[in-house]
Image (cartoon, rainbow, N blue to C red):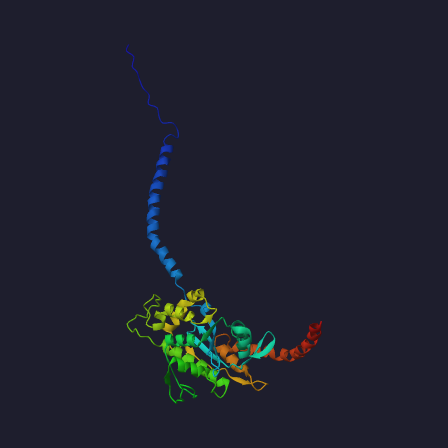
Length: 351
C-alpha cells in the first residue's frame, strides 16, 4: 500500500496579526496627521498675523489724557514770563488751555508764595507740583521755552489771528482779529501793558486755543478718505498730523522739558488723532481770581476751580454737591487744630 503524505496548514499564532495592523494604523496616523497639521498651520498663519497686527494698533484711552505746564521765558526786562497749563484729552476730543497769572497765590512745602516766586526759587518741577495742588488737577509734564523755542513752535503751528487789546512794541490795538507773526505773538503774551495779571492770563489761554483750532482745522488734503481711522504716514489731511514726527524732533530740540521720546511714542496716535479728527477742540477758559490779602497776589476762585474740574471731566456736579455737604460741618471743627499746630511746632524747632 502506497503511503500518502498529508500536510496540515498551521494557523497564525494568537496576536500575530494584530501587531502589524496596529503598526500600520499608527504610521498612517503619523503621516496623515503631520500633513493635516502642516496645512492647518498654513491656513491659520494669516489669521494669527492679523490678530497680532490688530492688537498692535493702539486705541484712544484715558491713559492718553495728559496735562502739560508751559513756561515761556522771553529773557527781556520789559517782559514777563507766561505760564499756561494745557490738558490734552483725546477721549473727549478736547484741549483745555488755562493761562495762569504770575502773581497767583499757591502753597509749596507748607509755605505760601506766588507762582513766579515758586518758579524762580524752586524750578519747573516744583512749580508743576504746586500748580497741580492749586488747580486740583494733575500736571504730568512741563515745557520751558525761550524766545527761540517759542517762535519755532509758532512757525510749526502757524500764525495766530487774534484781537489785540494792548499797545506795545510791534503791537497796535485792534477791534477785529489781526494776523500776528511769532514775534508779535510773543509780545502779546509777555507784555507788561495789561491792566492786571488776570487779563493777561486770560489772553494767554484763549489765544493759544485759537491758534490750535486754526491749525487743527487746516485740513489741506481734501482727497483723503477719512472714513477709516488709518494712522499710516502720509494719509492724513492735516499738515501737523502728517509731519508729527519731524515737528516733534524740531520742537524737542528747541525747548527744555521732561517729555521723553518714549512719552511721544506712547501717545503719538492720540496726538495725530486730535489734529486729524478734532473739530475746534481747544478751549481757553479764564481762571477767575480774587485779590489776595497782601494786595499784590491773587487767589483762585473756588467756584471757578470747580467749574474747570467739571469741564476737564475730573468732577461731576453730583460728586461736587456731596463733597460740599460733607465738608461743611468738619470744616468748622478743623480750624482750632490748625491754630494749635504752630504752638506745638515752635518748641520742637527751638530744640
